[in-house]
Length: 211
Image (cartoon, rainbow, N blue to C red; front, top):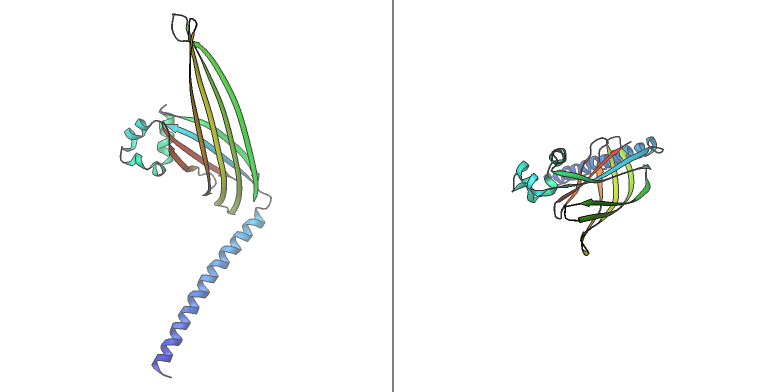
């Protein structure tokens, strides 16, 4: 047998081996996912989303001005530390439970009016806030440590402050709209930041799942 022919046979054999190994990995992954779907066919997945706002100055003091430019790289524990130290706040929390490979949706509206006296000269202020949150998810268990979640999150906050002094009135309004949609892979019991954006402050969407 010629040297060239031997070399060709070796190359072809190596190529077939690589193909078989790759195919084997794919089949194992597919089998693992199939087993997970059978095992967790009737499972209920709990999904939680929290919208958190943090002052930029607080983040700069904690992690440095250069690192704040990439909000998505900020560790979750740093964000929650700001909240604990009153340098941030949890704007909203929504939770829902869905069956494996099923969809779910929650809509919530709330309205708050607060009247207060801001000085001793008959000056009063009425603060009105309307908050609407919409959260839609489709969840799928890949294995015990991996859940794929496709989601759409929307929050609209309308704030108005009406100040009155004698017969004069002045109204200030502010509207905040947050819309986020994506697909993420989450681990049960390990919440993480899935989106971050810059408004008047740093806004983080944190999601977690459990089975």
